Length: 265
Image (cartoon, rainbow, N blue to C red; front, top):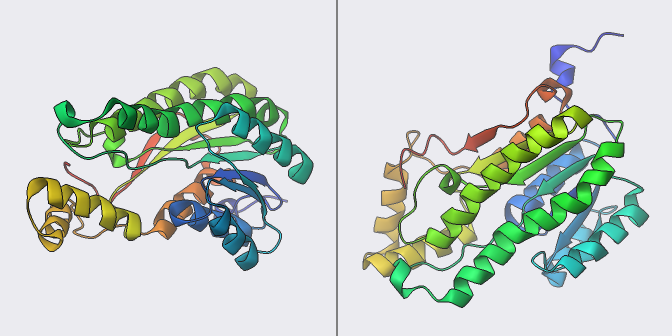
């Protein structure tokens, strides 16, 4: 039976999905979206309490506690994935921290290294361990890397963060070429200013560094967005679902912004 275009917008039911840093924020929204689409979902996060809350809200989701910047923790996650799911069809690599805010000459080396460790090294650890499983998937396997609008624009006072997000896009484009012949699609999502506690904290730190109020900083951010509104975690989750649907079967190697058209940072 021929699948309609409308039907193709929904991922195949039963996909085996791993979402890193999935206990809160964008990650948790992606978890909810895939569960609603009938996927089997495994989530890892460094915050055990947040994982317990997610598991209580979403029965059937399996979890691992892990620091994604540590290779040994990622190894444990994949042991758990094999036991819980028996394989993998989708990796949503969502790990990331904001990193420090300030002029480059004032940044501490330890903060730079931690940002690189969490935001970039983790993407290598997860991709290198996921790829053998994705190559075995019969379900048009997908790797989604969560970058940022700061992965296509310069971001003053946030050099460590922006550097990692640009690097993630480069990693994704390289993997898309490498894995395409094996039928594995690789894309990056670049969220813009996402409404929520994390963004409020980022704007607060930037406001403090610039010597202005939080509200003034919020208005400055909105003024840089063509649609003059922030995006939601569900906007980002919807893009992740689309990229794993049959409708996106020929989309690979793309850095797709979900940002209301952020004009500059």
